[in-house]
Structures are given as C-alpha cells and as structure tokens.
Length: 76
Image (cartoon, rainbow, N blue to C red; front, side):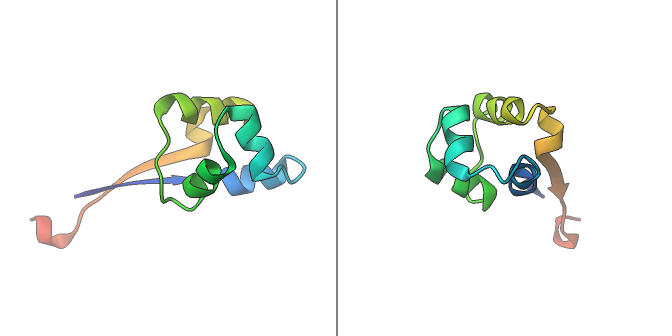
C-alpha cells in the first residue's frame, strides 16, 4: 500500500492570472523552491502550509490537494 498526494497548484496558479511560484511562496510564507518541490510532488507540505496555499487561492484544501491510497496486487 502506498499513499499518493497529488496537487493542482500549477493549474490554480495559471487560473489566477498566471501567478508565479515566487508570488505564491510570498503570500503563503515559504520559499519559491518549496512551491516548486510541492508542485513536482517531491515534497509534501505541512498541514499548516497546505491550508495557507489553499487560502491564497480562496478554495478549500481538497481543491488543491488530493490524497489516494494505491494498493498493488502484491499486497494480497
């Protein structure tokens, strides 16, 4: 079993007048590198940061992040 967290940050940024990673980082209180890593699914944000990012976009956290449990046939 594997937990996969995906996100829609890139799409949301472009829907908001092509907001830059730098602007999102400034408004959510983190670095541009952190936003880049989250978008690339190389880093999972803290719960606090996840809520801040959602707040910047004016949406619920579930519209920014998706959580899924993936099971393989080997787990049987």
